[in-house]
Structures are given as C-alpha cells and as structure tokens.
Length: 207
Image (cartoon, rainbow, N blue to C red):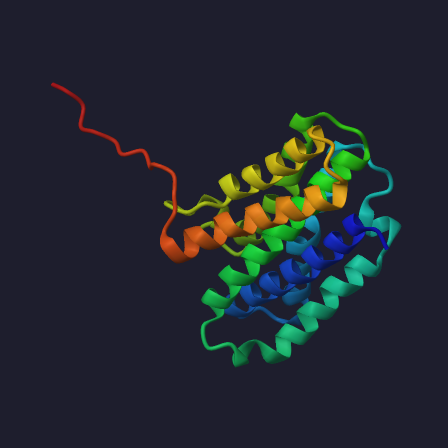
C-alpha cells in the first residue's frame, strides 16, 4: 500500500465518521447516515479524479473505499449517542480528516507530474469539497466558510507546503507528511486559539 493510498483510506474513514455525526444531528435514518457519510468521504476525491481525468475514479477502481465509508456510518448510527458533544467531536475529527485529505490530493497530483498550481488546487479540492457538500445537503453553514476560522486557508498552506517541498527535491513521503502537519496545525490553532484572517466589515455609504 502506497502512502497516498493510505492517506486516502484514512481521510475516507474519518470524513465518513464526520458525515455520520452530522446525520445524527439531523436525526436521519440508516440510509441517510450512509448517504451523508459516503458523500462526505468520497466527494472531494471524486471531484479531484474527475478534474485530473483519472480513470477510473478511485472508489470505482477499488470499492473498498465505499465499504469503509458505509461501515463507518453503520457504527456511528448505533454509537452517536455516546458522544457528549457531537458538534465538538465533529469539528475536531474534521480537522484530522482535512489534513489527511489535503495530503492525499496533493500526493495524487504530484504522482501524475502536475505543476505546483495544480498540486495546490487538488489538495484543496480533496480536503474541502466533501465537507462542503455534507454541510450544504443537511442545511448547515459549511465549516469551510465559517467566519473567523482557518479552513480553506489551512488546506492551501498545507498543499503549498507539499508543492514547495517537492520543488526542493524533498522525498514525496516527507513532503506529504509536512503537508498534513501544516494543514492540521493551522486548523487546530484556529479552533484552539482563534487564529483567523482579517474579516471584511462593511461601512455605511457616505451621503
């Protein structure tokens, strides 16, 4: 198993858990749990593979990914009540999933020999799109767009780290490890210490 495959599996599992926890907050049935979990877990990687013309798409080539996501949904369906604060658990699990997924997306693009710009974009898309679709489908404000938090910025910084590291001939596994670390540290710092970019504030028009 390659590092990129391992990152894909890990991000699919953790993102599936976050999707199932969102489904539990929305009080969906078992089918709803499975749908939201699979959408969250596979959505970002699917868009990545479509844009890169990677055929077949990763979970079609290996349906085990689909099984991992569905199994996670089943487990959470019967255990979601154990978590005292599902929202807090969801947010922290999502931060780990983001780090793994950004590294996986960047790794796929690096493996296909794409330019640094594409590597960064594929890392961001893989990390952010599944969670975005999850939150939109259940009618919640997407975590990726929450005011005063680093999310897309963390994904960008992590993917850029991988791209820069490869430019300096650092081995791909180390570059992807650095990518995951930078992504998670920025996201965790935002959650713990309130790190954020400046937020636009409108001013009344001058008469």
